[in-house]
Length: 139
Ligand SMILES: [Zn+2]
Ligand SMILES: [Zn+2]
Image (tube, rainbow, N blue to C red; front, side, top):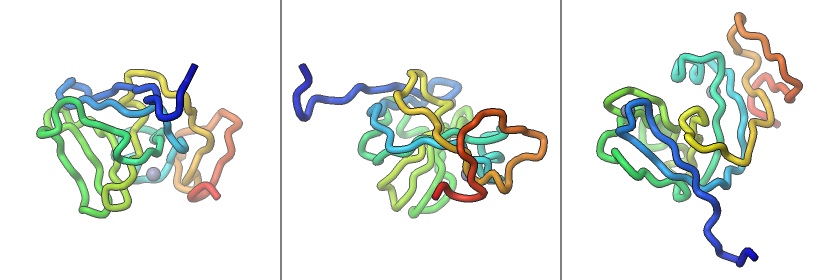
């Protein structure tokens, strides 16, 4: 029997070299695949699957002193300083995280529900699923 206030399931994840690890509540608010050019360059992939959550629900469990921040205080990307893995974006002056889902070691409950910024997707990549597509942000 679950009780109010019971801790939600925690998921773990981390970077390529294992130097930076995190744990996060399995309580993501949304997840999408972003095809914008910034996400493509940051990840080196056709698109970036990311999931949104309040920043206090993610905790760095290893390597907190070994991260590389790219960007400013309002918004920045967090990478492992050793291997360069892109872990998440910090938004809204540190209040919200867009977790790069590819760094999760455990499977989250949520699945990407849409493709966004399809207007700038890579011409060499064809979307083959039936998820809704948006030229920009999901409306
Ligand atoms: Zn690393
Ligand atoms: Zn993007």
